[in-house]
Length: 636
Image (cartoon, rainbow, N blue to C red; front, side, top):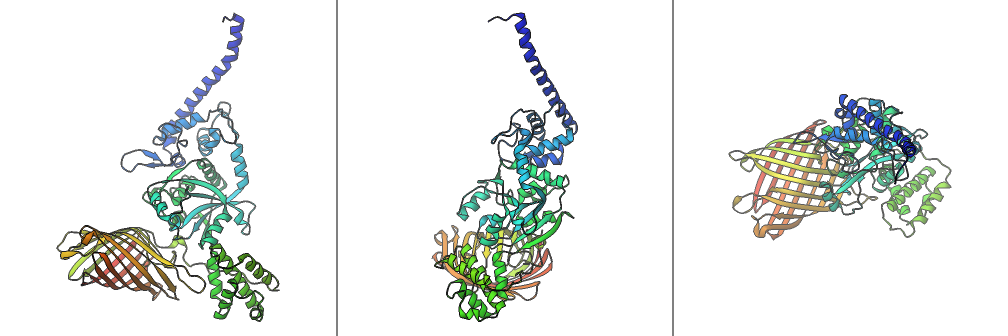
């Protein structure tokens, strides 16, 4: 095919403008990249927060924590902040049009775009700004005015929530305290439908799940936590400017389709929520201090540590908390009526109830309604027609011409962020039989029942990675005990609530075997039973099972069953006493009868300091040994 000179000139006239534009784009991109390097933008904390870079622990350099391949645009962007910045600038020249499934990079990475624009002042004639309709619609639906950090108290029956949970509520401009349930919440969680608690814990320890941010109505979280799981909520209203709120939302938008490998102890809901919030201000640095692990209470402490960041704190008691408080105000006769009413044993218009003074009658109907609703939400379907029963109680209450005062349980004196720090070491000295010893104990996290209770859930013990080193005089220092997991849940029982108490612990500890040797033996123990609460006491009785494994044991193992009992007595707010006893009969493998009697005492000196005294008498392999010790406990 041949072209005339006139045809060639026409074709060139059509192509030249595109060639010229391409040359200008390339030149402008090079100019922007050069200015970014001159300004050291890749070294700025704002850029490293947006890309979730953290310094490597062993070798020099950085590593990005986002694990989605699409989040880092450069081939080496996960480890090279400058390369990722250059690739990000290049992506902004894309002419990709927005659809329902595709975004232009200026919109997909809107937080990066806005920050780089503020630093480099893009020329709109040379870098066309894109309209991000999807982000604008999402933002308009949120209509943000404030952020509120939500802390849900611990829930021991779920491995993912045994420390509690934190998430962020976006408060809209047209909402008030009465309509706040309609707000949206930004939540980070592992993407899994796993219902097996052990499987979740194992996979969560080793990054077996993808964790991602999601947006959901706040009322669904309140229903889940307050109604179904009986967890109190604490709302920490944050004092952020509209520009700071906008930066956080822009970053939440670009994180939305991406994921992180979820790790139970460090890269969890608490850690990544802090990573999201710290983009609000350049001086915020929440995540650096938590390289080895973070729990929800630490998130709240990190936020409250910045003066003026928390505007106000609101306590939202769980449905069960309100119900317990309501029942505590009643006498025994009215409690019995509530129990009979909520189980359908008497009707709402029974003569015995109608004979009560009007205020008491209303109170019984209201408590009966709350208790019946609570049982239904908890999955206890022991009433033939629960819906009919609830309807009858509501109808009877609506016929009473009396307005009851709201039932408001008192707010706990100590908030979750004001309790003791979650890590702890113990310095101890003592004597076992005829030998003196010194001991160092270090716990990674988080709380046991001899720690100060303020700010924590009563009866909930969660100890992870508790390590004890002991030195006997004239002998080498040895590892006395290593307990990766020690969980104890003492949930008090009464006429209305009958939860089971339970415990599980596993690790290695010194155990007596033949010839006076004490090797480290693998131990797995569990128990179940009941607990009962008084004004200043929490008592328990548990059926226990214990397994020991070591080649030094007869047949290499020992298995037994028995029981344990004790009571945590608060003589004063600072002084707690724990008398206890435990008996285990090992009837398989190495046979033995283990018996332990003891008393533990703790006195709080300050929020993060206490002293402890232990006295115990223990029988192993028919040999009795007495142990006494005194300890200083320091929390950090």
